[in-house]
Amino acid sequence: MPKPLAAVALALLLAGCTVVPPSGSPSSDAITPPPNADAVAAPGNLGITPMPASAGTWDGTYAGEGRLAAGNGCPGRAPGQTVMVQYNYVSFGNFTGPIAADGTVVLSSGDSFINGRFANGRFTGDLIQPSRGCKYHLEFRRA
Picture 1 (cartoon, rainbow, N blue to C red):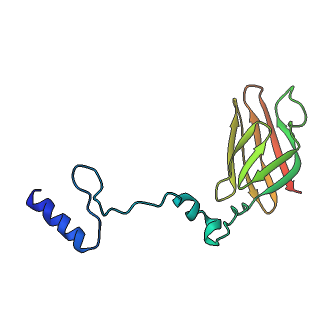
Picture 2 (cartoon, rainbow, N blue to C red):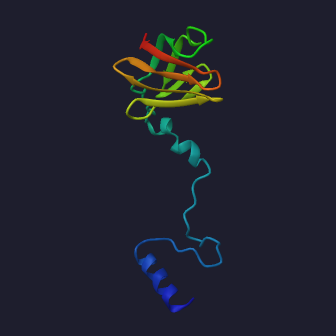
Picture 3 (cartoon, rainbow, N blue to C red):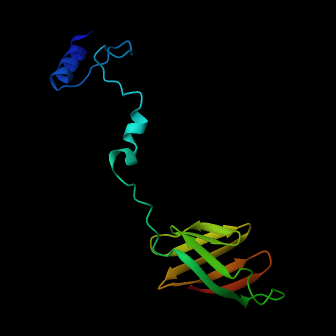
């Protein structure tokens, strides 16, 4: 072993560390986990109850509608009547995605997209369908 490497190994040994020889095989005094390490380390086996992921700020079901704001020959109302939010992840028909920390969302499905904001138990935004030339204003309240 070259002198600089030997000095590092000696310093590690003095610090209480296990040194693995250069061959890559562990030394005879290396610590190996017990065969049931996964079972022992499971939170329930340590008397710890895992915490469920906390609900997001905007979680819930929102009911409302989208009214036509622009476009000729477009249906008067946007498809979809409910917005579902779970763990700050929104789902509205084919549109899904995360909600930013400030409550804003930008979602897309095909060439259509939604941009809007969650605030005070409400979601407001716009659904834009460029290929059809339709734009809807969305208003939903948490149920």
